[in-house]
Length: 341
Ligand code: AHG
Ligand code: MN
Ligand code: MN
Image (cartoon, rainbow, N blue to C red; front, side, top):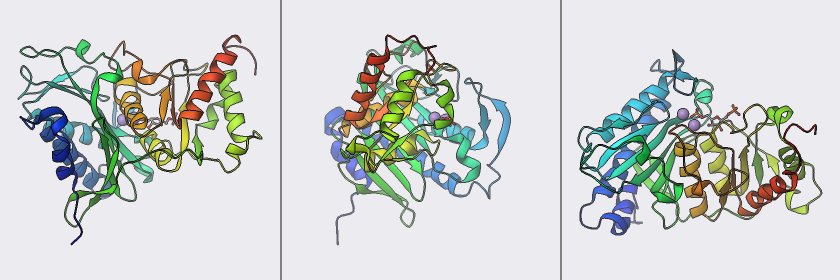
């Protein structure tokens, strides 16, 4: 019988890197996988379980919170709460960090997550996802503080996401490559389906919310026109694909080749996406798969957050296209942002 490489076995085989002795890291990753399985079940039945729709409240981002956001958030927190190796959590849905019960003093790991990415797509049955990032803190024996999370993305020891689409796919990296696992509902296990993901050099698509064009800076207008209208043979077969769920757009581009951009613009100079639990983990994964991620000036992974919910412009995908955006930015740097395009 062909070997079934489940996520649990895969993590176990990878554990030598961090916790050959304790198995802490392995247990943490497996708990995150468990949480995504339960979210996947909720998402699959959303329409039947009255979990669609709004809660009538807003989160720290000032964004309307959908029920499934809260369910996913509480579920992840509940599962991580039991783990002695996790000391604190930073979630998109919570203004401040949360200390876990079991590991608040002795835990070595800090977990950041976007419990449900693409909330605006929940009610219309379009792919959504969960994004997570794992860091280790220097010292233990005391409660973690927010500043423990405010470190560059290069300090992440693992990152991953689960997308809830035609199937549920768990993708992660612990620093030696990226692997994807498809949920087999008949056994309730994530099974290896995408070993050793590497972003192709082709640019099958680029992803941007073109409705924001009216606010874009000149470099973004020129860059998008270069990709979409230009004469460069590299983009002859390039399409625009944008579903409005960051993790789904980035995942598709990771598999077929492409670049996603949510740039800063006149209306939102820092862009929309959050560094700690969107840009950092996805930049970690895409770099592990041979791609790149920039805010237009530097490397996303080198950016140190000034706050838990700091937003950054994000251009992520093929290294050539990411570097090209940085070139366009430099070229237009001399033009003041309010110049007419
Ligand atoms: P979240 O649902 O976690 O708030 O994230 C939504 C983000 C991201 O998933 C997506 O790329 C972006 O919002 C879409 O924004 P626009 O609708 O402004 O294009
Ligand atoms: Mn998000
Ligand atoms: Mn979210």
